[in-house]
Image (cartoon, rainbow, N blue to C red; front, side, top):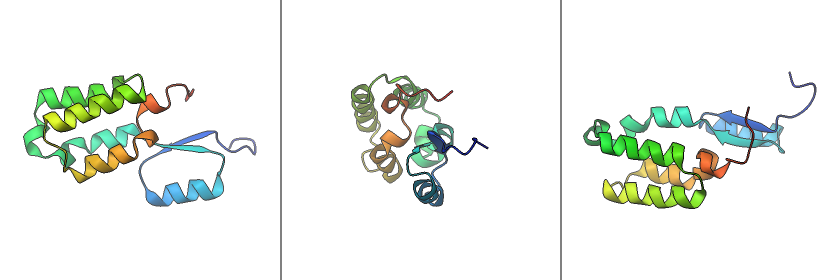
Length: 113
């Protein structure tokens, strides 16, 4: 499909098997996670009390989509997590640990068109 060339970038959901397969078959390919799939899970993972909280939702989305630099993202993330008492949310902690795989601020310099 790519004229015998490996893709430069691949974006997938967070399927662990895909991550292993991409690393094995395309070792020079940069793999990122699909932000749409991650954001789709947000309301389920943060609980019903924050599900309808417009301040939380708009702040979280702004942090994810509008941060221009990794530093800006990290500052805003910590602010949101603290403000809304999410320090012990395992899902958010795991997402933060893999932030370079899905947060646009970490690959703004990459053309994905």
